[in-house]
Length: 286
Image: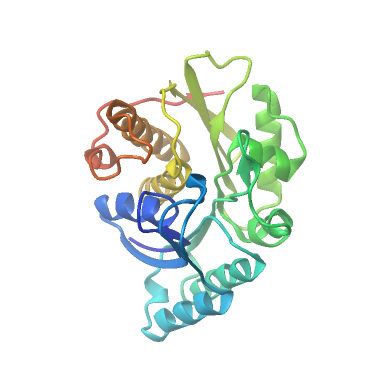
């Protein structure tokens, strides 16, 4: 399996490609990573150093890979945080070039906009770009609840509300794609206070995965969830199997992180969780 992953990079910690690449490699995927930024650490620390790359620099790398006649072997494009619209256009350039060489390749868009505790943290215009340009090309979308509500304008405080919003989002995605939506975090009135829900929608079916809530607050877990879900959806052909595998692995990763009392997810220490999760969770039809 070959995955082209276009995301940010940090030297210290695990967000963006620094969160997505290693789990994919540990599972056996060959990852062609293109970094949109290279920072010392994630911006949640309040101070960082590094460089933001241009959309043209991303295009140049994509075209360089294409010159090796490699894109026909690319199974999927994965994108996350977009620094500005030029980066977004470069990502869509990559998707177009890959599909020209391999029409069966899929595009997984993690529509990073913000979260409930931070609000919107991307530059102006990114939300509109995702809604009108990126998601209409996507086969898989992996928003959190905050992002799903922003993108659809619908309230997700109830299970039915979340299902309606996921359906609305899927209707905006690539018409001839799989139109698979993974809601990476969901807390409704029916969610027990000590648990967290994830839900996937594909082909009109909805499945819910419930895992124990852990005493940990870290950056980068969403990037890992998107990567893991993409891998397992590609390998198994089942959104439900992918939800169970990705959710089980992420729970194990976060449990190890909570036990360590660490601010950064323990990607290396918990690497066996990607291959053989210590606890397997099962999804239910909802």
